[in-house]
Image (cartoon, rainbow, N blue to C red):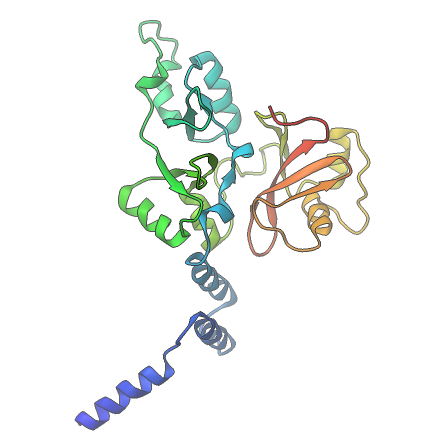
Length: 274
């Protein structure tokens, strides 16, 4: 009896994967046998990648951040909040690398009801913000988010300069793919102005719509969408944060998974961000 048990243990250790490649191979084999479907395989492969992916690889770059300044009044803040559709906004101090905290859109509601007795001071609604290095691994960050109930962190480089931000949604999308929310529905504009003077463009926007909007004539041969045009310019499926220039337009990938681009940021040549 004892010998049979030991043999089972030995067999289990002999079959156990010794590295990530062996795990991936076993998952693919299970999919071929019908134990897993392709969607589950894709998700599990992304889970394996998350432990090797760094925050700097998937963060929202600084140029695409929607931020508030410490000295903004309510009338200036509210249009930014409404236009962006975000729920959390970093607040920067006089030094633009100084993050004072974050403001939640819901905390502005009491001040937006035209109550003259309630004087607005942004310091009254600022909440603590988490600051992390670009080198932090996504699996560690996800655990921190879960334990500390945080949803957003500011990202800094080795010199302490702000390089971007990352949310819990950004991390989860690396595992399960694009997560649609109320701001991803079809009724939202395909092309939206950004605070920095650029534009946010859905990758499924047709090249014809783009040309009509910007009064240009981009070559749409063999592609139908801006996402397809940008992918063709890269020559590969780009990752978040990668940039490419097409006929005077600078495109930056804001959202993408291992299948396609979802969202782009665009600046015109000669129009640097504000």
